[in-house]
Length: 424
Image (cartoon, rainbow, N blue to C red; front, side, top):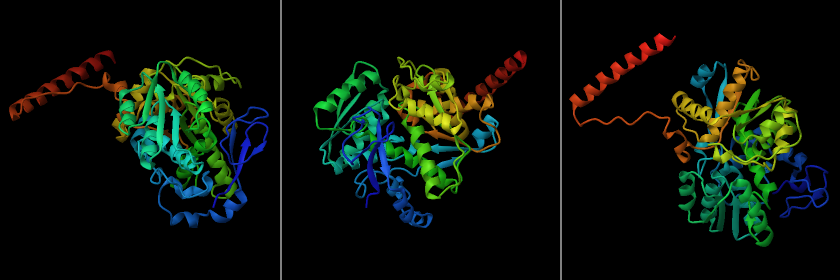
């Protein structure tokens, strides 16, 4: 049974039926899914949840499909990790990592939105799915289309990290690299979407697709025993993720699962592509497009589709925004790896790098619960950190060679300590 009433304009409130629509024909505002929350409240309870499989689909009443999910049925319910080592390094009391770097099937939070989008595309009887992508979305659409026999057309900037290119090609989609940045790719895809009857997950069926991100918020709340964190930091590219996490919290409040929402939401972006952060800091409603220049290519969207709503979410929640330079991204990736054993891609480095600065600036207090959203796996963006890692040690296959290495390593460590003492 579906609890979707239809679509509603986020600007003028005009209502539309459950169709392949994404823009209001009266004011050109974006559309989002409208639910029958009164009916959901009668059906969805903590007791009903307790017996359900631990996937994102345990919250199916709050997701926009009419039938049972047909793809991505194992996506979601990723770990929420109490990050004590990282908390100590940052000087905070209570810190959690929401780790979507292990999401199924393609190791990023995009598996959530694509599970919803492709399931919905099948309900609309599309035989082809497509997307404009900075990498992770390409991987997930490729994989989930393959799993249900749909054709896939994937459009990406031609200079994406090779790990993400390979992680799409392996599923044999029609992968097309465009000589331009994501915003140019997206403009082309909008033209293609108007000519071909394809389900472009982040264009013509975007209202349904975007709802999948809410599942991350539901999981965080449930994994914290229905107590929301005081602070949540998440990366922004198009800006949808933070808006949907906050929407999920407000929905849980409406359904009586949590107390009044007092979570502050923080937006993290790379320094070379931070139009949302800039708008927040300038206290402006205008998102000024930029030409991306950051190693965080998965966040390199210079003209974010949901930028205005991301800024509004930050403000309404009482949060803030911060950016991370390329150097800060790399250091944050290394910090998360050596403290918690989690290898994140560059977007996760942006999140931790921004959180570190927000904590140092005392914008995020050190004594209140904090959740950091890690949205992708570092195996996809190895190029970003390769030059910042120690060189591989090579020795002969003998005990003498190993002990010589140990002796030299100890001597180097003592020498390094003396240099540090000198400068201190």
